[in-house]
Length: 372
Image (cartoon, rainbow, N blue to C red; front, side):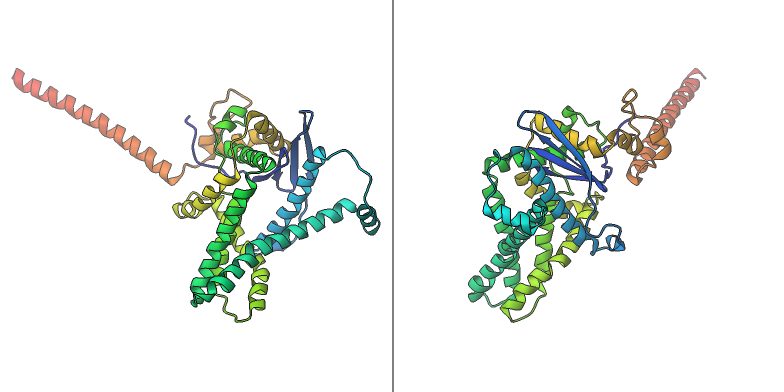
C-alpha cells in the first residue's frame, strides 16, 4: 500500500540546547547532550507548569500565556543543564556566590535561574518593545503625524530589529552550532510526522522547517502586536509604554492560538500566514551533521514511542517487515481529496473497460455485416 504524504500531529516539541536537544512529550521531557568526551548524556524528567492541573489551560487565548511562561522556564532549566557539561574547572566561590547561597538557603541554582529569566525578559522588552516605540514615536513621529502609520512603522521596526539581532548572534560560533541542533530537532519531528522511521538517513532527508517552531511564534507575536497596538490611542508616553508591556500576555495568547492551528492544519490560508515563519527559520535553523542527528534521535526516543506512532497514524509496521499494513485501510478514513481521487480513478478504469468492450462489439458487428 502506498504511503500517505500528509502530516500527522505527534504532539511533541523541542528546543536546541548547548551541544544537544530537548524534546518534550506532554509532562515528560528529555535532554540529550553530547559531552566533551563524545558520549551522549540523556536526562529524563517531568515538568509541571505554573498552571498545572488548572482549567485555565483549556481556555483559548488564556492558555497561551501559561504555555509561554512554561516554555521560558523549561528552556532556561534545560540550557543550564546542558551548559553544566561545559563549565570551566571549579573555582573558589566569590563573595557574591557566598551571599547568594546564604540568602537562598542553599537553593542558589533555582534563584539564579529565576534571576536569569527575569533579566532575559526585561532585556527582551527593552529591545523589542520599548526601543521600536522610541524610534517610531520620538524620532520618526516628529515628521509623521499620522498615528496609524506610526503604529505600523513601529511594528516594522520591531521585526527589523529582531532580524538584525538574529543575524548578529548567528555569527557566533556557539550560536551556529545551536542553530544546527535546532535544525536536527525540527528534522526529527518532521521525519516521524511524515510517516518515516526515525533513522539518520530519513532525518537527513527531512525538512529543517516546522510550523510549530518557536521562531515562528515570535514572528506571530510581532505581527499580532502591530494589530493590537494599532488600536491604542492614549496621549501619555508613559501609558503607551506601560500598555505595551501589559498587553504582552494578550498578544502571546493570541499568537499561541494561531500557531496551534497552524501546527494542525494544511489549509491554504494557514500555509500563507506560516510562510514568514518559514523564512525566519532559514536563519534560526541550519543543517546538522550525523552526530547532531544522533543526539536529537536519542532525545526523541527517550520520551516518545515513534514506532507505535507510525503504526497508529500511518499503519507502518516498523517491527515487522516495514510494509504498510491493512489496519490503515480499516482504521483510517481517507481524506475527501483522496476519496475523490480514488473514485475518479475507478470511474476512469470502468470507462476504459466499457469503451474497450464497445469497440470489440462494434468490430464484431462490422465483421458480421461483411460476412453477410
